[in-house]
Image (cartoon, rainbow, N blue to C red):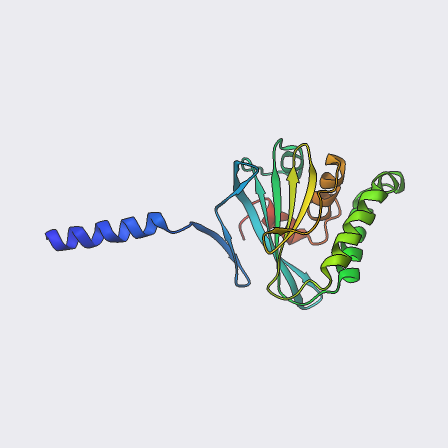
Length: 193
């Protein structure tokens, strides 16, 4: 009996020492919580981006607190993180064009024009990165007071891109009224199948 108790204690200790795996999408693992700007962010939801029949990337949305609606997620104060796990190679131009199309689908021409310099900055960062390779992790973090920090496999790709309205525009790609994929939007908002 005492040895069974010790085994249970050892299993419990091991379980609490491992990072909590909250989601796995197409083999890409996303933890329940991440640290960003000294704050603990929680996994709001995770899903799969498909283009035709191809799996393009798995992604997760991290927020300071869970949000069930797009407005609540976008308006949440504090740092935020979009974590993308590539599932195929995508060249920089194709990746940038897809982001631009998602922004244009959810914003007026005047709104897109207002953030055009920041879109160009993002395109330059992606050009510098080159091809987003299968297995690469791309982070798009909102850093209050600094801007949108693009990271590749956990390392900053360049200086932050200023302007909260730009990060909000990025979120609208996946959470806006015309998201790139409806079921991905629902997954990022924590909807279960």
